[in-house]
Each structure stands twice: as structure tokens, then as C-alpha cells.
Image 1 (tube, rainbow, N blue to C red):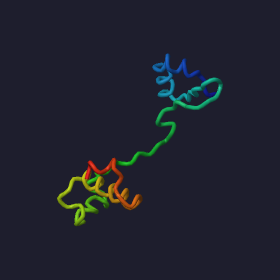
Image 2 (cartoon, rainbow, N blue to C red):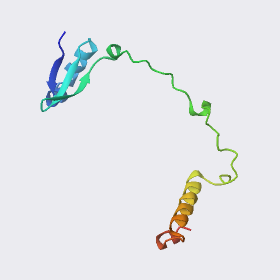
Image 3 (cartoon, rainbow, N blue to C red):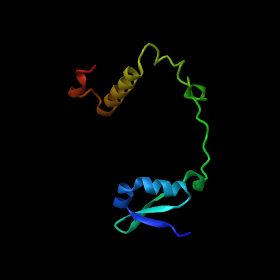
Image 4 (cartoon, one colour):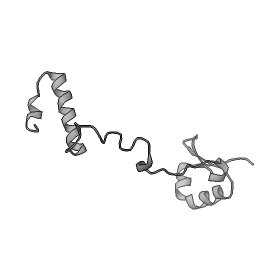
Length: 103
């Protein structure tokens, strides 16, 4: 079966029809100014294997930093801002005036 080629405008204006055709197994190529950039196909045709989502709380890296002393009693924003100021001080040797109101 030959692939159907439609313009980007046609795809936008007739997406319901294109969706239905793709769902029924056809491949629709969407072209912009004669150049094909996108194909609309059904998931079954792609044969994509999906992974089951894993909670971040069950991830191996969750809690990796929980025992660090430099993070305790600070919010993540406070800690990141502190590290950024340290980097600026290291770069310039001193804290530029635009940062002094924040410290």
C-alpha cells in the first residue's frame, strides 16, 4: 500500500479524517512545502514497547543526599542559591555589587 501524502494545512484542517485513517492502519505523511517531515501512524504499526512507570520514591537514587550535612535545615532553593553565590565569589574573587543585596 502506498503512503498517502498530505500538506500541513490539509492535516490541520482534516485531522479527524487523518487520525481515523492512521488508526485503521494507513500511514499518512505530512509535508510542508513539498518536504516530508512527519508521519502519522498507529501505535500498533510502530510496535512500541512501553515501560511501566516507576515511582521516583522507589528509584535507587531517591534519598541519595539525605545524610549530607550541608543540606540539613535548608530548603533546596536556599542550598542552590548558596552554592551559586559561592561559585560567583570563586569566579570574581569577591561578590559583585548586584549580588550583595541577596547575601
